[in-house]
Length: 224
Image 1 (cartoon, rainbow, N blue to C red):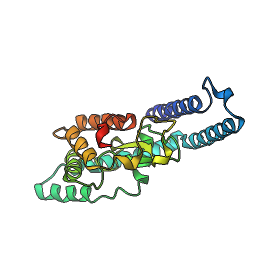
Image 2 (tube, helix red, strand yellow):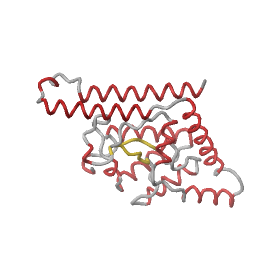
Image 3 (cartoon, rainbow, N blue to C red):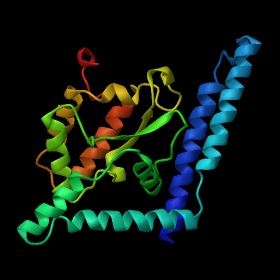
């Protein structure tokens, strides 16, 4: 029953993306006033989005497989917080050394978190970066790991437009592109947001950060 509920939630998320794409590309008051070539371009773009989102849909078996791997992944993260001091230090070091690129692992686990990829022009972004430009990136990564949250946990992931050429974006009209967020100021903001929190509250803050990134409300305009 749980897997069926997860699939249902994921399908709802996909349908919401379909609705937003439809609204962006064709259900505008001036659509029929546009030149025919522009109308054709919009129809083609909408068709590509629909085809992509159709491929994003999953069944119970796929969801169960991904969820099982995520459960094991998270269990290993929590295991790195218990044991003798030397043992914990070794396991924490292993978490710090875990690879975060390519982002296929994060992207796959985001399916289990009911976060479908809006389009091929969106990249999975690690909210707490695997590697950064400042000490705050390192401190933030240590903070999530000491609470048992691994770098590719879906709570540490969010979809963003891949490049500047992909914005403005139909799914995330206010978001900056993925690479534009990789700054020292960004790392400081993330660290300040999650510092001192235990696992449950930390995960909550990561999800808030993800929404702020998609809405482009995290960084002051002067720092963008």
